[in-house]
Image (tube, rainbow, N blue to C red; front, side, top):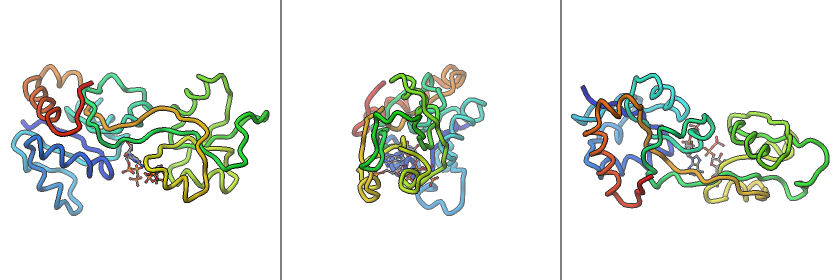
Length: 210
Ligand SMILES: Nc1ncnc2c1ncn2[C@@H]1O[C@H](COP(=O)(O)OP(=O)(O)OP(=O)(O)O)[C@@H](O)[C@H]1O
Ligand SMILES: O=P(O)(O)OC[C@H]1O[C@H](OP(=O)(O)OP(=O)(O)O)[C@H](O)[C@@H]1O
C-alpha cells in the first residue's frame, strides 16, 4: 500500500514539487497533470491534490497519511499538533492593513475583513480589542477600498498587492510557511517510511527541522 500525501494545489504545489523530487519522489505525473488529481507514478508515495483546508479533512479522517499545507491553514483551524517539518517554502506573513486614513485608535468598533476569522479573532483578543469580523473568500484587499470594512487581516509576501491597491501595514501578526503534517496513527504504522521522507526533505536546500 503506498503512503498517501495530500498536497495543497496551487502556490504550495509549485514550491513543494521540486523538494519532493529532490527527495527522490517521482512527480512526473504532477508536472504534466492536466485535470488529474491522483498521482501514483512513485512506488512509495501516492499524491493527491486538494485545496488547503481540505488537506486537514483528509488527514484527520485517516484517508491520507501525510499532508502538505500552509501554517496559515493550520493556525486558522487550530491544528498545529500535526506539524512535523517546516519545509522552508511558502513564506509570507499575516498583517493588519488598510488605507492611509485608517485610524488604529478609532473609538467605534472596527470592522475587519479576512479569509482567516479565527486568526483575526485571536489577534484582536490578544490586544484586548473587540471587533466585528466579516469573512470573505478572496481579493481581501478590496474590502477597505470599497467600504466593506475598516481594515483587513491577510497574508502578504512581496507586498505588491498591498502597494498596488494603496494599502498600508498597521501591524505585523504571525509568519507563515509550508508544513509537512502527519496523521498520528500513520506515524506509528509507517514510522520508517515517514522518517526517511523527513530525513530526505531535511537534506534538501532550505529545509529546517521543527
Ligand atoms: N502571497 C503569498 N506568498 C506566499 N505564500 C502564499 C501567498 N498566498 C498564499 N500563500 C500560501 O499558499 C497557500 C495557498 O495559496 P493559493 O494562492 O495557491 O491558494 P488560494 O489562496 O486558496 O487561492 P485559490 O482560491 O485561487 O486556489 C496559502 O494557504 C498560503 O500558505
Ligand atoms: O504580498 P503579495 O506577494 O502581493 O501577496 C499577497 C497576496 O497573495 C494572496 O492572495 P492570492 O494570490 O492567494 O489570491 P486571493 O486574493 O484570491 O486569495 C494574499 O491574499 C494577497 O492578496
